[in-house]
Length: 96
Picture (cartoon, rainbow, N blue to C red):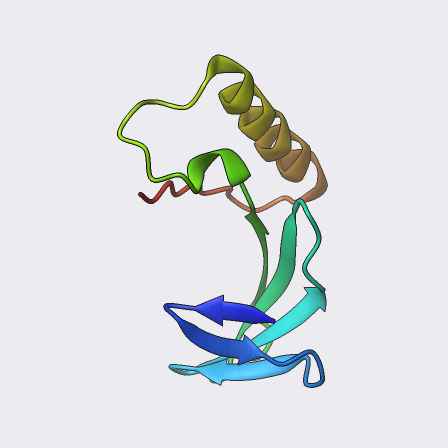
């Protein structure tokens, strides 16, 4: 199951969902590292963007302290690897 803002997006059966003018395709199911999505703008079909959402268990504690240096290095390595595989921009968003 994959959730967005507390709402279930995928039940494990359907691999596509619609959200605000976009089709979101689930390319790779949840793994311990993350999930791969493709975002398709419905009005401009040729435009597709691959999105990889990383999971960081270390950040789930909602701790006000900064993550360890080791955890930050792992995150940067994941971003670097994704950048090598993808020609588009890579955006990192950290939420508490």
